[in-house]
Length: 134
Image (tube, rainbow, N blue to C red; front, side, top):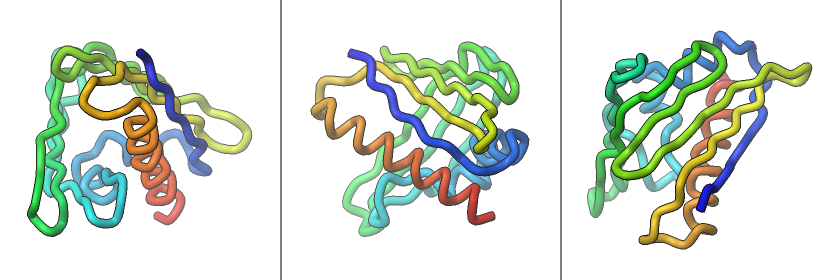
């Protein structure tokens, strides 16, 4: 099943794109809740390039690497990537109110679709707050 989350960021596309694709920024916004954080990130933003974000519970109880390979990149418009056996697409669209970001991804079977949608939406909302607060 495909899950879609989206948000609008009141900022110029250049600022939105940079914050979404720069490791120093990613570690500041990439968390679904206050008790998690991203401790490191790497980005090779090109088709065939790899990315990785180390996500950990702040109490040290659990952590994992969210990693994959970019399959298509159109600057300021589109990022497609594969991670494990799944795929995701991030679309950036300029609007009069800012930049609409839509993320669609294939659900996995470990967590419910509702949990996955809530987690990915929380991360995207955190991203919007981060960019708008800069």
